Length: 169
Length: 174
Image (cartoon, rainbow over all chains, first blue to last red; front, side, top):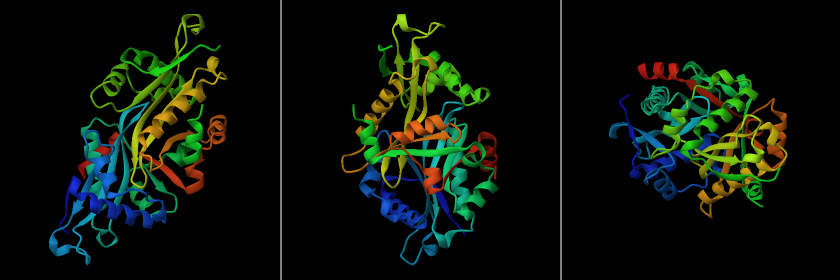
């Protein structure tokens, strides 16, 4: 199937928001999405963006029954490893269900890798839920390592009340 | 030992930052994995678009370490993005030299970071600080859990993955 991959622009935020919700639904966490299209526009497309996006588009004749031609995306940002230096973190990677199995996910990830290498990155990181077997299988086939399993690294967070409490004198 | 200041790192601090990165790596038994140089830290932290930010703790001359160091703690962090909630703060490294622990320096650093974290969040949206801890580092895990941190790997099943440069290049060649 024909598809193109390109950098996201501010006009893509409506479709990015839609697909973020679809991905959240897959991860059974739709209630946790608080972000709006406006947030994405401000946070991704101002002078100092907090994230970058790439979009997959298919020609009109392959559009979904709802009329969407934007059928996949990846969100990434640059991070830093105190061991190796510049790194890239792939925050979201998503292809709409009816467009899977055609190499689109692989192409998206390859694009993030390319962009990361071009920026001088030594490593690409991301997280996966332990029950997401199709994704785990895909990532292992690409040569990825499960750092949590191999090195016992646990991903932690401090948010909401705990964060506010931490900021108290 | 009461006197110390917490401040933003400056270019002149890169020697101490690298030293502290290596000390922390040694503690994690991964010292040989540190490939960063002072030049990398300078280019990546103090250019137009820094890849990281750093806070350091400095003590006066009379409290310097036996080797003569004044910079005795640091935190390296950067901003990330969660498509569900927005801007986050990621704490990459956080370390206080052994002789300077137990005086509240670590807690003070975390407090400052939380303030930075809350400042980047718009009032209507919550924010969050993320970081990783090795599961065998029970002292640190307890330190963080006492402060309300959640272990997303245990509680929600998130696993952290990595691909190194060699495999990244293979991926782009396909």
